[in-house]
Image (cartoon, rainbow, N blue to C red; front, top):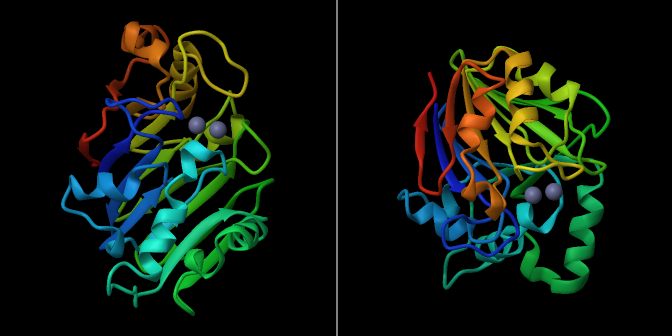
Amino acid sequence: MKLFVLGSGTGVPSLRRGSSAYAVQAAGRLILLDLGGGTCRALLRHNLNFSQIDIIALSHLHPDHIGDLVPFLFASHYALGYTRREPFWLLAARSFQDFHHRLKGAFGEWVEAPPGLLQLQELNPDGPDQAAWEGLTIKSAPVNHIPGSLAYRVEAAGRSLVYSGDTDVSDSLVELARGADLLILECANPFKVPGHLTPEEAGRMAAQAGVPRLMLTHFYPPCDEVDVIAMVAQEFAGEILRAEDGLVVTVG
Ligand SMILES: [Zn+2]
Ligand SMILES: [Zn+2]
């Protein structure tokens, strides 16, 4: 299992950190965890392409996590002779269909996938849920951010990684992450902002989940002015990675 950090930032425009997006290669499939602005372009840096995406899992509908949904759908519909022919799956909390319907009200057919190709699986926003393919399972759990915010656990070939999306302290996320090989956890600011984690809270949650490896991400600019790894290390004894756009990590 391989993880590509496409966007380790937020909604703050930054040359260093794009909006939230992560690509995972697992069980022969390309999975996107969130689709912040610039994702389709960031894939190219790793010789990946929007046309290869098999599964998109959306953590929540804040603009910094779905900003490239419209460009992705537009490119899939029609990009100078390219029309997507392979189906793709989209995982999102229940009510996504209503959101997509409203997008279509604004953009019309340009944000419709070619007929029959978009396989939507709406997930339970209030409890655990999952989607499965041959050799691959993606589990979800609600997290404490805005209604309908989900964290995801990708499992394949005995390996697993968990992505928090945006979250405040969440027992459901600790449960989902228990024993995972890698936990990708938001660490938005070095001070408390409700709905997000401080470095100390992120470290405590990783310790509770018992993971060996933690990747901190979703950094607002103040996080780049402090030593977040040292702050997290006060609470968590495992390996700590600081996400950067372009980073590639092998899981397991
Ligand atoms: Zn965010
Ligand atoms: Zn958010």
